[in-house]
Length: 487
Image (cartoon, rainbow, N blue to C red; front, side, top):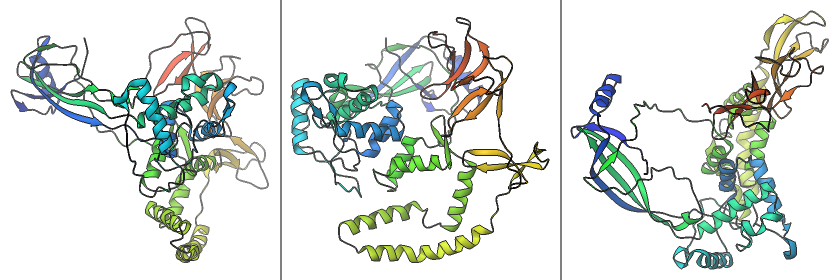
C-alpha cells in the first residue's frame, strides 16, 4: 500500500478557505469514515530533461548540499582528482577535467565515449545523441565542463585507489556527467480529486512512465509520487492532520545558495567563489551558524560604511558590468586603459570623500559594568577580529583584557567543580570547555546538557544533525543511545 498526501480544497463542490479553528473542526466532524471516493483523475505528460554537466559553481553547490562539503574542501579535493592518482597497473591518471570553468560544453570524444558506455550498460534507448549545449550568458568557455577524464573509470572500479572524500566527489561528478548524456525522464503529472461526505481533497503529484537519466541520477525532486488510481474507486484514509502553514521568511544564505546567487548576478568567476567565501569569514564579517551565514557586528558596520561611501561599487550590477568589460579587454574588443580610466575617475572622488567622512565616525565601546582588576579603571567591551572581548579603558597604559565567556548552566562532567562555558577557536568554531582550565582540560565539540546516559553512564551531548535540527546522544562513541530529533 502506497501512501500519498492530499490537501483540503472545499465543501460541496465549492472552494472553501479555512479561516479559523472552528472551520477546521466542522470539516473534521464531517470526515467520519475510512474511505474516500476518487471523483476525478487528470493526467498530463511532461518531460524532465537531464541536468547539464557541472560548472565550478554547480559542483560547489551540489557538494555542499549532497556531501556536506565546504566550498574550500570541494576545490581542494577536486584539485587532487584533477592532478591525478595512481590507479594500480594503469599508472598515474588525472581523473577529472579542469575544475575552474563556467562552461557546460563537452568535447565530441567524451560525448561519444559516454554514449557507448550508456548503450552498453542500460540500452540504446537511454543514450542521448546529438545534444548541443548553450552556455550561460557571460560564460568564458575557456575550458569544457567538469567531467571524468575517462567515463569507463567508474567509481566502483577505482574506489580502492581513492580516499573517502575523493571517492565521494568523483562519484558526484561521474554520475552527473553520465546523467547529462542520457535521455529525459517522462512523467505524468497527476491531479486527483477525492471526497467524503461532500468534503473535497486534492492530491497533486506525478507518476514515472520512463525513468531516463533517473536510472542513475537522483536529483531529489520532492514531488508527491502518486499510485495508480481510477475514477470511482475508493482509497483508505491513513490520517488527517489539521496543520496550519505560515509563509516563511527567506532563509539566510548557506555556502551553496550564496554561490548560486553570486553566479546569477554575474559576480565573480569560478576561480573566485571559494576565496570570496573564505575571505568574508577570515575577516569576521560573517560567521557560520547551523551552516548558514550570519553577519557579525563588525560585518554590519563595514557593510553600512561601504554602502554609504561606495554605493556604486557594491552594486551587483556594477560588478557584473565590470566582469563584462574585463572579458572584452581579454578578447581585444576594448583597451584596458579606457576601462580603468572609466572606473578610476569616479572611484577616486568616492575614495576622497570616504577618507574624510570615515575619520569622523567613531565606534563607541560599551561599558562592561565592572572595573579592571589590574589598575581599577572601568572595563569596556571592544570589538576585535574574533568577536567581542573585555578590555581596560586605560589602554595603552593598561593592557588587561579578558575573554567574554558564555556559561551554559552545566557543571563540568570531568572535574564536577567547574562550569561549562562556550568558547571559540581561532577559526571561530564553537566548542565547550571547563572554566577551570588549565586545571581541568575538559573540551567537547558538542554541547553537554547536564544529564548522564541511562545506558553507559557517560555524559549526554546535543549534536547538530544533518538537514537542520538537534539530537541528544551519548558522548561515548561505542554507545548507541540517542533521543528523538528536535527541530
